[in-house]
Length: 425
Image (cartoon, rainbow, N blue to C red; front, side):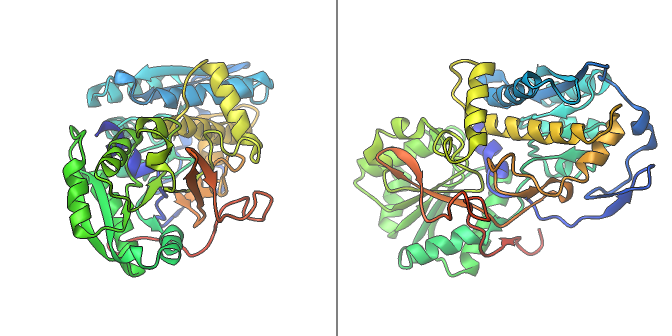
């Protein structure tokens, strides 16, 4: 459940929240905030020296959960530092483990506020506790993958892939066109948590909007490891296409094993939360996963796109430099792209950067792709585009299918239809 709760809210698409316009002391405007940048933030140079910038990463490392968030952030900093840093300043990461507790997250965030220029690349289920510190200190920047909705809406919080609060219609239409009869008998498994339920509500709304018929949906508990009874129930219900696109690999592999054991083979749709180099092996080998589709709003950053998209190759090389032998995952990618967003804004924050000038620079980043590692997002207004990627597992490997070439104007992503929010959200 730890992984399930974490990834379903952030791994799909981002919120298209309405934006407001605010004015900072320098007279320029910033989209996306609900209040102006505090004037004191423009004279706050905490953590900045003539040759270095100290930043914090507060993530859950206990049980090995989100180590990737710090590895990915460190990897990008190592990459930037190898080129001389940002305007001659090296980026120094001070990592903290919140111990998978709210108190730990809040304390680590308070420590970061006192000692570091900003927080970068965080990933924690407890970020709502640190969010209270950020709300009380609106001049302290956080550039991270945030899971708490109240925190992500704070004017001093920015994400490379903003928090989901809806669903892209494009992938839903794609599968309707690909499998017109199968979408009349849809099955879905959803984690038993408020965040998962909210995310599923957005996806379910779009499915029903375009004519899907959901004949089976069930929640699964954090302790569930055997999905045999779910598979039998889906088989009896006549499910023809199964969406486990919000499941992390450890749960998805158990489902795929149960499908094989019950000789039941509906069309399977995976998602960003499921994408993993270990999924095939953990599911029992290629035969258990071949033919499954992958739909996500990022590239095949675990290796499939390393040739077509140079930034993917760079990401993978520097992850191994930062942590030799580490197997990158979704959280590693999140750490990398948020570190890149931070570095980009820092480069535009002036020769004597302050927390205020960093927030000002972040408020102007309206198009971000991390070199096409992710589909375009608009961090300034906490929104995303309608672009996504389709892939399929063939011979145990994720390969692109039915996408424009990377050399196209959409950089290899499908950008049809729109991003949809359920009314009332």
